[in-house]
Length: 206
Image 1: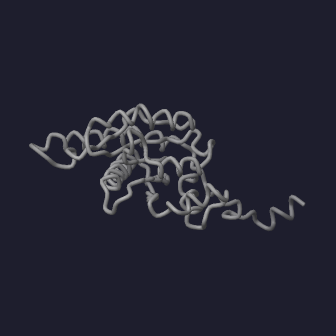
Image 2: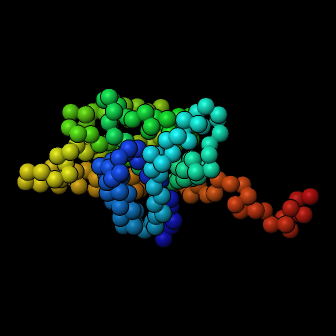
Image 3: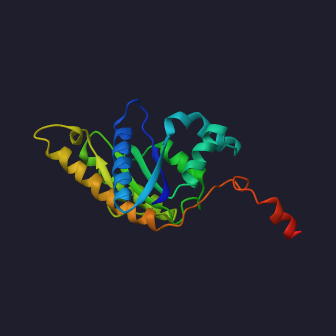
């Protein structure tokens, strides 16, 4: 089996949050879909609320804190990304956009991405195609066809139809993401000193 790393970025502000709940469901579904095609996955969660102050400091100084730097490395070194944001003023949250800005314009080139969002009502569902998909397309990421939106009713109301429909969307989106991640060459460590060149090789090169 082949190892891959899946980064999950969630921009929920409350704790617990429906945004994190959706992120966890998507991560579990993607992990299962990857295992079905023979790929083991290391899932790494990035909770943006934990880095809110550091993100602003990074914008002002140009340098990340150690904790934010580790979060950025998690995304930059991943083989695939699940990005989940709550809806604020008919778009992604400012916290979510700030993290994307700090990542840089070329960070996600060619990366498989699954987009998702949460809101109180279904009338905000167009955020996926009107805001998130254009954002990641601009960054030259490979966005899977199915985006996942979850309104308050999707978490359990009525006869359960909405909840089952959400589960179906989660499974379909994860099934689209898995083969894209599996097809990528492992990105390997970002730190050039993480895999040092053997001393004998350095001597031979000299």
